[in-house]
Length: 113
Image 1: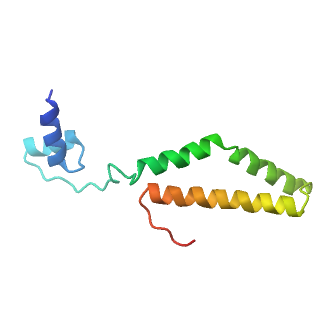
Image 2 (image 1 turned 30 degrees about the horizontal axis):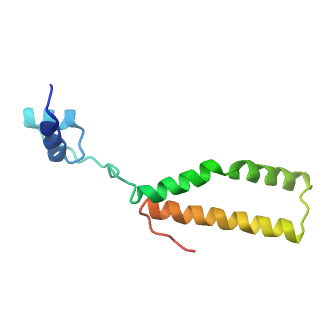
Image 3 (image 1 turned 60 degrees about the horizontal axis):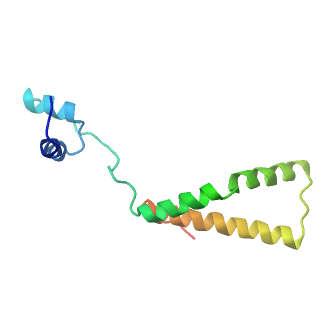
């Protein structure tokens, strides 16, 4: 079946998250609709914040650097000095900031600091 944009929008609104085919069959054949559990159709609360964090992740070499750190730890070649400790703390702070931005962008509540 073909619908105009307005007709399709009305159907989608009436279907309330149920797939349109299922909704149309239920209405046409007067069947009961099973309650469908779906995630929200718009789970992102703040698209700009999400774009910022994804941009930060994309432009960083975070995963590569963490992998190199893990390799150095496993081989015993990671020197522990004030510079290394400072850089690790900075990386942890960056990761925590990205986590916070993702929590805000997705509209979730933080469970702690």
